[in-house]
Amino acid sequence: MSFVAKSAIKSQRVLLALLFMATTTTSCVKGVKNPANTAGTSLKEVIAPATFNWQSVTVITIKVTPMPPTSNRAMALEIRSDEGALLFVQQLTMHQALEQQISVPAGTTMVQMSYGNIKKSIDVVNGIANIDYTLPIPTQYQ
Amino acid sequence: MKKIIFQFIAIMAVVQLQAQTMSQNFNSGNRTLESNLCWYSPGCSFVNGASELIEGTFTLRTGQLTGGISNPNGLITPWSKLTGNDTLTFKHKLTIANGTTRTFYVFIESADNRRVLDTLFKYNYVIGSATTLRSEKVAIPANTAGKVYRLHLMAIGIGGNSRMLLDDVRYKGEYWSSPSTGCTPLATIADADSDGVADAEDSFANDATRAFATVYPASENGTLLFEDLWPSKGDYDFNDLVLNYRITTVTNASNQVVETKYTFITKAIGGALRNGFAFQLDDISAQKVIKVTRSKNAGSLYTLTANGTEANQTFANIPVISDASLLLPSAGGTGVNVSKLVSYVAPDTTTITVTFLENGQPALGQTAITTANINSNNFNPYLIVNQSRNKEIHGANKKPSNLAATNFFATQDDDSNAATNRFYKTKNNLPWALNVAADIIYTQEGVEISTGYLKLVNWAISGGANFTDWYMDKPGYRANNNLYIR
Image (cartoon, rainbow over all chains, first blue to last red; front, top):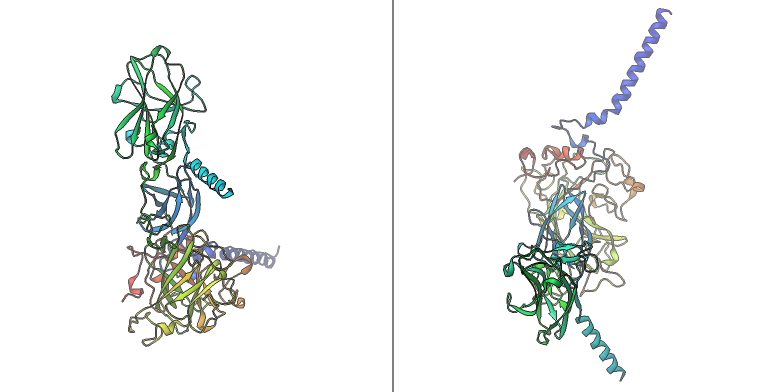
């Protein structure tokens, strides 16, 4: 093969390599735009996930497991944040089921429920707070 | 004659309802559950072994009855309003025929003088035949009628290791315990407006049409921050219009929404445009609104219907401000309350009440809404750009109102796509509005928000998973020199 032909082939390969690098570099631009160290990164340059809705609150579902029916006396079921802020209140009897969505600050992992004298801390797991009225048997009746 | 017959039937129906049967067969197999229903069984278990089961799926079994009077085992019923002249029935026996003594008692305890137990029944087991099942009928005195008692069915013993088995307990009475207050007798509830909500829990104790009020955000005002150059990104200082807000939702004893009250505090205008502000209640029909009451007129930018919502809208759209610059007049320079070089202008407060029930009734032809229908998700605030009613700026993925012109979508930096319910986002999913459930300080004019809130970028990149507290005043979270702090 002549020197010119070899040079042409080499140039072609370099060109292809450059083209390949350009392609891969372009497709890695997203990673470059969201660096691990975000200090000084402008918000205008950020790529946020497509599903992100920019909310500082999240919606969780409270699910109340009812007790077997006894009396029809209704009381207020209150759901509060760990800091005591009232998030939700509804009048219901202990034998009424309830499934309701409420708004809580993003990152909430626990809420406080109260119903009469029944007060419990409820974990929020996978966006659900499962609530029941069950308490341990009182010591004097063990 | 017919009237007399109907009255008799009605009276009998009431009597039947009140003469309920209290019964316990232990078939739940769950002592904790029964305890929470106020059926206590001290020292006992629920068993289902073939040799011990009396009937059904479980039977109550005491512990070994060796402690004498100091260690009674058995069943305590819930407080019940008795009918009097009744019979308590139950079945019992011992597990094995041993023991020095074994005695079965039924005590009756009055709610009027707690812990005084009168003896209704006493049976001394004949040890040799104690494993034979007995069915008992114990008379409940007539003078208990209409009064509240509970029954103690207890076994005591000395020596041996036999236990008592008990099942199929029945008597007439109305459940009168309060599981939610430690199984105390039901107390008369103070309820001044007779709406069924105790005064102690009723935020409107003298108003039968209202019961509860919840506030959102729960702890403090929220903050709305807008960029007004949409569909162009602008300088991203998010102070072109800044408002605080608070929403109070009032419900009645039936958990229906009576009204929602909105308080908006217009704090800053970071530009020259004469922007308006309104909000949409997503998925809430405009027809469900009875009326809108405002502390000030919304202004000439809007056409209102008779109920105070905006005309030609499917969902309830509530105009708030036509021109924010009229509420916060400029003190010089560009913008208001965004530059420390310019005099501060006192914020303006606007309150709006949206009424859904009046005297307990919804709008004509409509059904009432509940807290299941309306919450923070429905609240869809938006800026109206420079007096152009058809140019709206909403939060990310919040739907536009009927009056928003769609020709702005997918132009310049906007990447909206109505077909996929994607609205008010750039190609990189950045917004033009932020709704923060806290009262936060905004950045100064021309200062990008991420230079004031140093964790905002991290929050955005993580899709909200990290630094959910980005807006809080924590070490390393803020650059105060970039914030508008007076």
